[in-house]
Image (cartoon, rainbow, N blue to C red; front, side, top):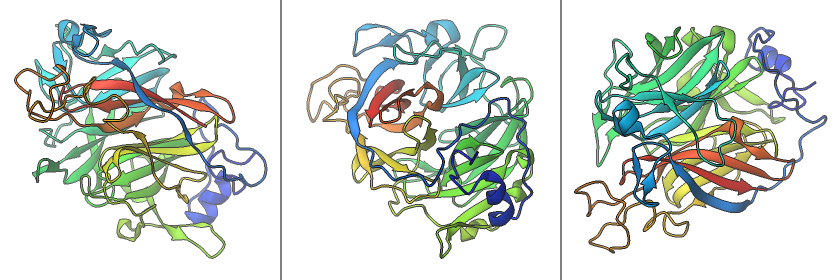
Length: 394
């Protein structure tokens, strides 16, 4: 049966002919989802229901709904606020990586859930120390200050791998992450060991989808001023940085071309506004889905493709903060502009909220072969928190 992402080419042909790597048999317990026979037929994806808030995932109180949150993270874990929320599967659990955290220990945080239904929110258990306080992600040998955050995680051979940015340099309103690294945990996120530098160029923020015997690694470079790039790495060589192959365009017959040099990587499309983003393969409508925040067009953008290297569709805005009940609802509107909500952090009445960090839960998607409901985290800046969102595509 052909690979679910590579269509009729098949994973073996992909590995041997395009990457120059040996085909290997996957040791993963879950078999890949097969693709239909024959060449996939391109179908347009439309947004049937734009993104809306399901629940607030962190903190003790949801100011918009005037009620306690489900997870009560301040009371239970001394975690007051955080952002991001990057999911990945590991040992029958969904783990979620959070960014710069306000709480008893600062740093970044990691939680997990055994929920299988995201429609009513997610029950999160944070990794914590013996006192019950959340335990930050600590990678020895790198800086982990502001804007130095986890961006992806994968599980290979029973080991947990986390991709983390570091070397942040202050910029205009934010900081540029200078480097990304790969770290590994052999105790399910309790502790980590630095493995190697991943990138200083096009793969600073990354999103990873595990496919058959390898990893499709999507990357962005300069923070919120980058296009998106693609690389491939065999799972069995995840500890070897030289095993990455970078997508460098297509050949005369449409086959993907790959290079061992990162500087040969080509952008998947031209829209240099990407910082935080996520890419998943949706098994229902059999499309690759990419979400990212952008200023032009403003909001959370959606692109789709039949193959990971594209061609990718033009962007559609799946969440716009004014039109989709963000501002004046769960995102704060600067009171100097309009006083229409009271969801702001204490003392931040005149600071705008803003949408960013749309990270998809691939395994929580539901649907059929024409329609799918997707779930993703989104950060709101003011209030500084993470919400769970859902949208419907067809």
